[in-house]
Image 1 (cartoon, rainbow, N blue to C red):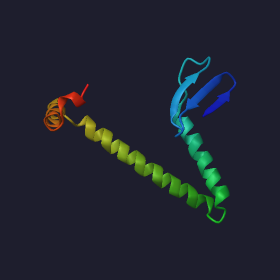
Image 2: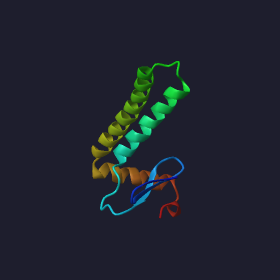
Image 3: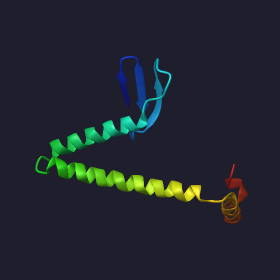
Image 4: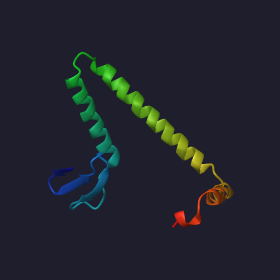
Amino acid sequence: MRSSATDVTLTTDVTGEFVKWSGEHDHPPDIAKCEVTKDIASMRKRAQDEPHIPVQQIYNAEYAQKESVVREHVRSVAALTQLRPADVHEGWMALMEVCPTEQFP
């Protein structure tokens, strides 16, 4: 999928994930802004497809879903940052015992 604006082209894969960009700018696109724009478009479409549901209810449902995903991501990052190098090494050693070494590059 491609969407173009003036001199910039943003390319995404079939799932809507950012793949590459090209243009005169010296920085990649703001991924957060792209995500927000995609979410707003999704909410507008849902509001059109389901006119019997109040817009505020659609917004609340979408926000709750995004909030839970963000909270889980933050928990995962926090857990990873609390690992000691020794913990990571022990985890790799345990994995190497279970899986044949030729599976690892």
